[in-house]
Length: 323
Ligand code: NDP
Ligand code: GDP
Image (cartoon, rainbow, N blue to C red; front, top):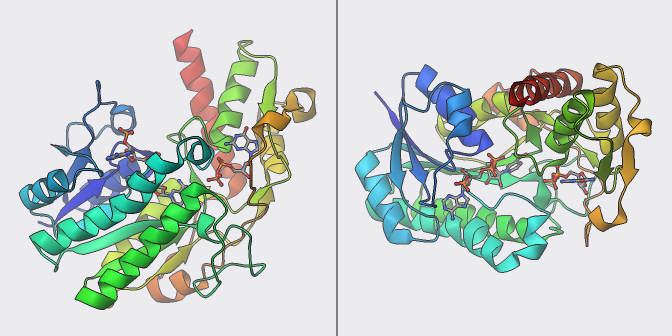
């Protein structure tokens, strides 16, 4: 039986990946930063909270990572933990650099210390492309990060590549474009919209305040994307892969889909709030997942409409339950 160790196991991707690996017969252990209360709602939502082993530790504490990875006896480490919200990275740039940037180096060093033969997945991001240098971004497209979050991810990307080249570690960067689900954090725009739609239907909210609705993203379903993470670690030779749908839509179009689903017109509810504009925007992202298709045999399965409908449906149920 193989063992996987996940950082960020309580996050969106951690929960879906843990479920995917448990279904493959893995033993799954995960790092849990010790806060006043540990929130396992995502693992509970997927009915796997009791099937996972938890190890106390923090990405900022190298010794805790060494101990947790050693104790887990994992052959594969999926590094998903991060301060992952671009918007907050301007409010907390130093924390973001420590957690999202240095955290990667801590994980790499912990693996190097415990057993450099352990395979490692690094959660890199399409935010690396930022001010895009090509209309469709592939593994060859130059990076131009546009936020403290993206600059921190750039550090993690290169450290991962450097440890692969320096110490022959099986370390891979998954350059994942935005991926969403009913387990997405409420601060991200898709979930903010689907949650607002549910609250509007239940008469708990009258309007939805948004920033730049002309921004375009290549949105996929997190449940599809975790399979690609696993596939990367099953290859003979470690490499970096773009994971995306190859389609891009505006935030406005995504809103239209969400409101249409419940028979409402988004224009009656959406209010543009300039305070929600970002200091530097990533106007458009569009991924080219050809290499992942060719070399991993991976393709996205869920279309944007299906994804947004699934999220609205889940939020309608949650809001109804809360009364
Ligand atoms: P989430 O924000 O849902 O999860 C982040 C996880 O990191 C949480 O489990 C959180 O724990 C944990 N974490 C935060 N700070 C620390 C810390 N100091 N020590 C240990 N753990 C910590 O992110 P996602 O699941 O959406 O994303 C997974 C990874 O993929 C992230 O690295 C993200 O940046 C990256 N990514 C995500 C994309 C997306 O569209 N979702 C796109 C591209 C990359 P807690 O909940 O206790 O705070
Ligand atoms: P990101 O791509 O990781 O930054 O994911 P987000 O979901 O946070 O943002 C996607 C896009 O939606 C960005 O271009 C934001 O500027 C835009 N956007 C517009 N209004 C909002 C809003 O109210 N909240 C968030 N989070 N993003 C918004």
